[in-house]
Length: 166
Image (cartoon, rainbow, N blue to C red; front, side, top):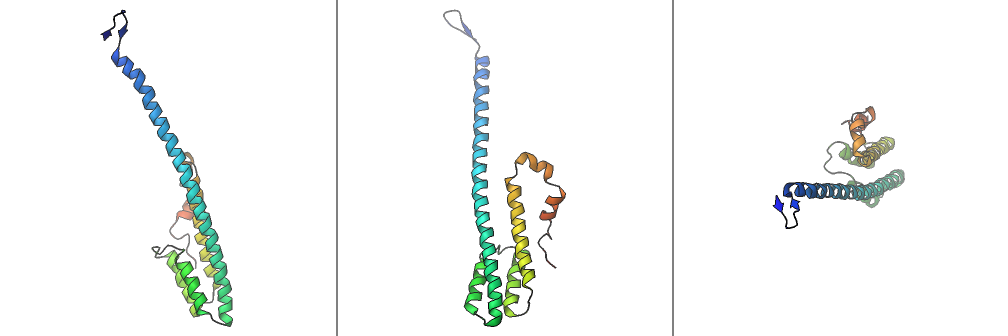
């Protein structure tokens, strides 16, 4: 306790408690606000990039389908190689199962070992659907994720064999 000249007493612990509580609350509130803003920007940017990627994959698939039918009439090796390059750089090279199956299927289509373009298209469609489910999950508010994480729909797209075809 400090006694001031005009007979006012000052209780230092009470003063510090009274000042520190609003300061701590202000820091917590500004941290949460900053985190919310950062998360909004991150979701917006990632979602936009993923949307561009999905559109790009649809365009590549269209070009591959057209080239497949053109190739059966008169093979154009340069065009096929260019499409393979676009496809290979648009999918995950570290995904040993599903993404590499797409690339292997592409190779087999244009080497003549396979003729099932519909299965190739289905593999791409499942890749796009899986990505779309991931985007929806990422954009979901954190407080609802706890209630829906183990729902049937979430377990389905998260399962290891979701993208397997035949």
